[in-house]
Length: 334
Ligand SMILES: [Zn+2]
Image (cartoon, rainbow, N blue to C red; front, side, top):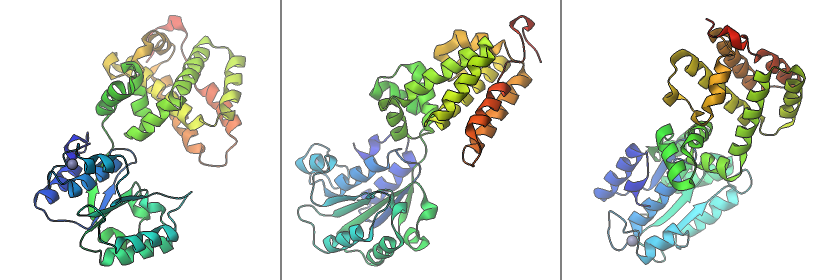
């Protein structure tokens, strides 16, 4: 993928192409921003641009060098990824050994350090020594989603290139175009992935997005059906689910849709556009105040998830809080 083709990251692409056009080589870059919004692709595209024999500025993407870089099979472009939870001192030591040999084939040796915040303190200090005086042919690209966890001395030696969460519309397009998702599902997945395409792809491929949808639809049916025993059972079932935060997030989006529908009637603003009959029916069972209270209850339980609260109990309370406050015949409400 050429730099210019990286979607939704105009600023980052501009930063990188401007440097390349002026043939002013930066020896250390820091790509910041949420995971999976194009940093890895940009790092490889930069490595291609630096080494492509066909063009010194825009990589051709088709020559032997470009293709091998894209396939992670080029001796002068190396990637360092965490082993387990950390990037260990030994990994940076081998980088240090390698970096002082001139490029084997290309013009530049490019080292891509993924999840750089996971370097141990020793590893970070070792990398710092390299950053103080990198060889003229070396370019280091550090990727991080948590810049504040890096040593400030490392950050200050790198040129920062910011990457941003992808817009929901762009994510939707990519999910439809590249993953073959139906448009109605893509909106929900994009929202659940909060701007990270890697996370969106993972949600789809693992089936977690589909399972979350199934659970939320089952719960929506039960809540509106008004059977307390069934609701209680669903609460029990959710309490045991590993994916509880994901389900709750989607349930929050569902109630957000209900409120938008009730307030504005604007279907194009809804995430669950594929479920219009159920949304319309359910919206009639709540007053505006009831929906706002439900959203607050959902936000509250999502904060509780990170504490030591008894989740089973909290979920049973939640199921009660989500109960409709109007009967169907009441119609509107306040
Ligand atoms: Zn090329």
